[in-house]
Image 1 (cartoon, rainbow, N blue to C red):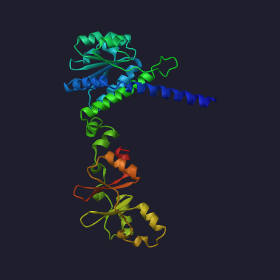
Image 2: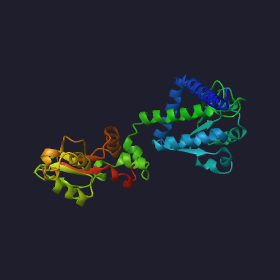
Image 3: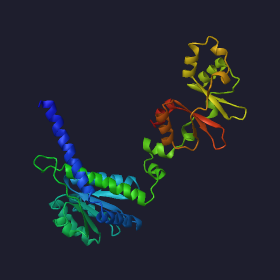
Length: 327
């Protein structure tokens, strides 16, 4: 076996070991996991927050867990055990729930902060390999998550255990999202500055070109006149409407190029002869995320936006979206 094959084989072994670890923890998703979810949900219902603590690799995963939980509507923070012994313990309130993470359950820095935390009257949940560990014995409840082995050849470096913990945290966050009725709009409100937030809070009406800035023509408009309107609007397509501004069709620069190769009189043709009937449309109240999905699935660059009155409300040119920091 050559060096390249050895590399790939070893990488596959790591993947398989960690997948087995995830499956092992998945098999523990029974009543204990339900209790974990319910304790977290009850805490948030009474106005408390989830305070996650851990050291080393578990601490890094704990930070990610807290961030994900908060992003889907479950107030959560990460508290470093060492900093907690020097003042950060003050962020704990009686309504909170302290979630301590340590695979071995024997991490000294973590165990040292738990007695003073418990004296504040804060309930303690442990996430560890065993409820018989020191951490488990100090806790009010332990979610056990043993894995068969680490991907490390010495079975020492946290690999499989941290991967499984990461997935467990995501499962907890997503279940709480469902249980608490968290919506896409709720998510967007918590991400106002990013592309994700814009996609789930903005609608087609927010990103479309208004009719006055679009190329709107009638069925009797010639191709030559239509191209002028498209140039004026700096648009790659023209929308064909009737007298009541209801959609009849669309004509794109691609349609023109295809026509021009075999029709010398194309500039004299009227839209009724050359337009594409029944083009792809979206409703004006469709979320931008839906617009992106339509664009990607249909592989198109231009979308007609229809208002609640059934009339053309505007036009979306896919080239406009990067400027709005959406794509």
